Length: 460
Image 1 (spheres, helix red, strand yellow):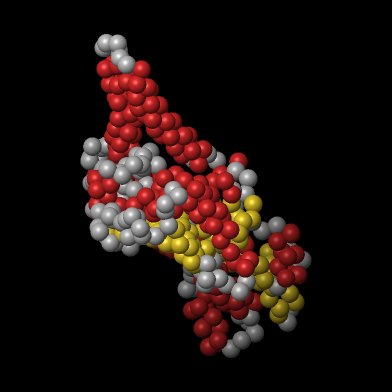
Image 2 (tube, rainbow, N blue to C red):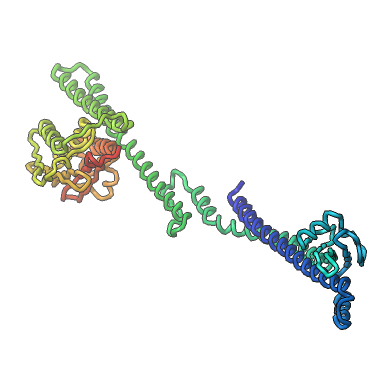
């Protein structure tokens, strides 16, 4: 069932229940009021009848005349009975069954007042005390006029209810159509989005209602999908290039060497060149393996408390072993008094790889003779390492691709590397609830910031 139909049915059901309840309440209280009002009229007649029948010989002629006038103002289809306390009928007027039995007379005598219905008749009985003793006066009548009006009211309420329901269903259908219009528009726009045009966005994202929030959320998802597709495309392109280059070189060298007999020195040169290309492929394979390992479930990685400054110092020493001519200056001066704020929770081997990759990048892209610098900053909840170089920098359009494996900016193609360091560092830091960011300007240098939560605030 469509949401529009559901909304119409729900809207109509709620209104129908309210309207039906209203009609029943109106009819019920009108019926009760009519019945009580007519009982009061009959009760008044019992007093008139009692005075006319029982006091006729005890009052003056003028009072007797007034009682007669009141007596002959009868109610519709009136029937009256007057009994002595012993059950003897002494006066009867009008036709109709009042349902008089011994039990009824006794109840009137004991309670002094009784009202009940006998078919369509309403009956009122009162005990009337006179100088001659106790009497039971019963009067009844049929409220035909009011019953007819009540019947008319029933018809009016039923017809009004059915007519209102027709209007409500039509109005509910229109209301549901209007309410679903923004969602229908979103559905049509989403249907037009495919893998080839992920740059499209939904147009209902400017408001503050739930539909706009849905559109905003969907647009954000499209942003992530577009970036993921772009990263995938870039990864495949760059990975193919990086893997193809050493393989092509190896195949070319070997084919040339096998064209004719060579001198021993030539064979050694070819083997040496092939060995270098094979090592390059091994480095690429190891990088891919490390990225895969850094993408596994974080719950399977053993985490311990580490001193962040000691981790950075160890990474610096390893970077200098790999690059003996490099210069790396680490600022350890602005330390907090509470050294526990330098503690982070993580896997030492993985974090060492991440920090080492960042330091090696800074060394690699620093001009000869200039030092790469690192600065440890302790914030309220995090520990940062800011690594800077004064190298070529990264173009703004290339910054969004720096965490794509194998991506390398055009201006650093001549510098040895595979484009694996930063993507690997990013994945390792994500496992540790941390982050990495890159700020760079062409010909001014690059600053990479690693952020990790302090151990006491680490959320596992």
